[in-house]
Image (cartoon, rainbow over all chains, first blue to last red; front, side, top):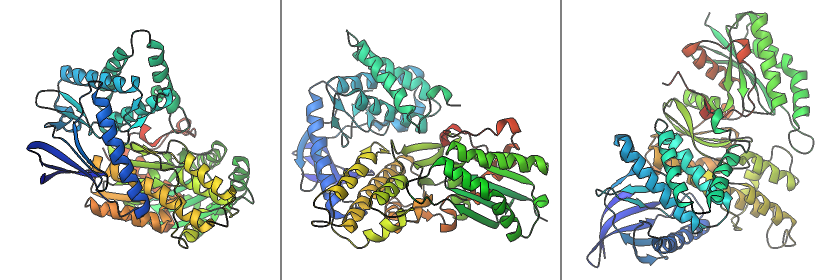
Length: 220
Length: 334
């Protein structure tokens, strides 16, 4: 077991590249946050480490591309997982042609629908948490805010947050990408479950109209 | 004589008039704050106070700046978002003055004004802003022509949540500073709901849990008000800091601005300053005088818009109580 180099210092965790019994791995270490009191900080880090590791293991069985978990160290809030080579979708999105964008967002839609249909909420779908490998495969990472839920509301919030990330970070291609995403999402909700899809989508509008949010059509 | 702008803030409990020149120097700033005898802000009562006092406030602002109303070259007013009946007073006064002395009028989004005054007073250019107040809780940064909202509360605003709790605990409005003081007396953390969804937050469960602590039989025995105040602040500010850090990592901005009324809280300041340092970003907190709602920020933001694309027609000055800051393009930064 060896940490070779730090490859990303995120908001919550530091990612180290290294080796674990000869395998190329990522050490995801949730850093103590000194701005929080220790008691609260320790609780949040331990909970999220266990939560993320459990979620990664569980959702893998639905055939979703997520990193394989090798080891969990809750005392040091570290997960050892398979190294996935590639780029964050955020960094390459503006270089993609429309065909690829459509393909990727379709695929992401199908992945999220699979999660939702099985009662899993990702909790932090952003273009930073999606990896595109050199083989053009999509991987979903960062399940630290994952929740188990089968309610329409939680699924809608999950989609709503992603929509907001697309608007704020990729305003120019948001419409195209979110449409492709929903097409893929809907595909997985077919076969007699159409109505549930409609309810989830309709509820996004309900969330947006709750005081702070205006209807998407009113957006200038 | 330099050209002058008069800015009117009237979105909630504060009716404020600021006079500043076109370079951003403030000549006067007068606030009149509605303080309820009991309960929260009743829009009708707030409106009454503003209606009674607006002329006095304007006159005091003019005499402090040692000018007459005729020396004003531009009127700016808070057009959105806020309490409808209260917004109307500001809009009505601004329209009247604009037509009376025949000068241009410009409507301003209150949230954008909180960020713009921070950029001016702290001399920063492109910050990630955490805007925290009684009515708003927003993490915003400038991206593709707008002040985009990266994170925000899904229910209560942070200031509203703290004030409501303070009221339940029998403290008088405004409760924020009192809770801050009480929290300093405790180190006993009581676990409370910590709810972060992506870069968004929810404070309603936290508020309810804190309220239940007040009603519990253990209150006054196992813990006291200081302990709840401490736990409430630590939990809520921990959440705010976490989403701000997330947005900072995501946007990779090099400046962080803490603005809005709750920006005055020292504990929150120290937390946001800590994460700014971690990400090698410069941390600035808006000066106290300009942290809460004020007419100077409205005047300054009105100036920016006026200089970029002229004033509004009277027909465009209708109030927009629910307008979001990310609905508006920002010509002066594009």
